[in-house]
Length: 212
Image (cartoon, rainbow, N blue to C red; front, top):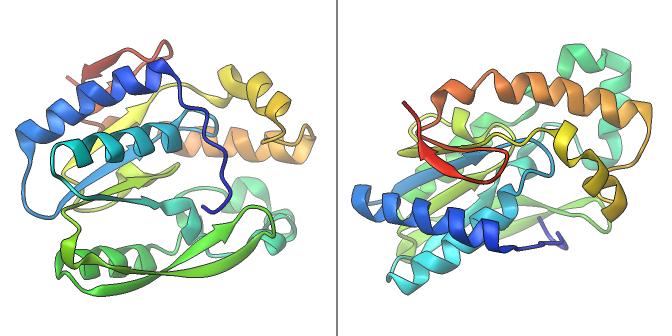
């Protein structure tokens, strides 16, 4: 997402080092890594550090923020969710998975690709063009990223919005109102429902372990 604010800390660097080591052990052509977690859990920060670290290994990894692929526009999403019921529509089906898989297909075939990119300042959706010819790896991050079919390595951050609520509110990243907390609770349920797909788990202290 454009204009996103990243607060990278030592915990992200330490977790990334473990994950990069696993990636290099499992590396394959056109590899796809997926990172899931709730709002404020550090997905974007972790994705950024992993991608930059892979460059040092000679691997060109392209971050794809799957939250750009919602099926409703940012400025229309609140009204749409309210009209249809938060408990009915918030979850995995809010993404345009067909668009996600088109980008993945373009990546696998080293083609030019165009994908949505949300500008967090204007809340408009821009179009980002990418040439996948020299891209070795995709790192897909987002609430439900590990649900992506065909991902080769799935990472799940166990921090929930309950633990990150104060920090998110203080940063102004999450509005403090009943609607938003209702959305976060529904997202929490949906994110936790796919935790079992993870290959790597990051606990609430940001300690990393392989899933059993």
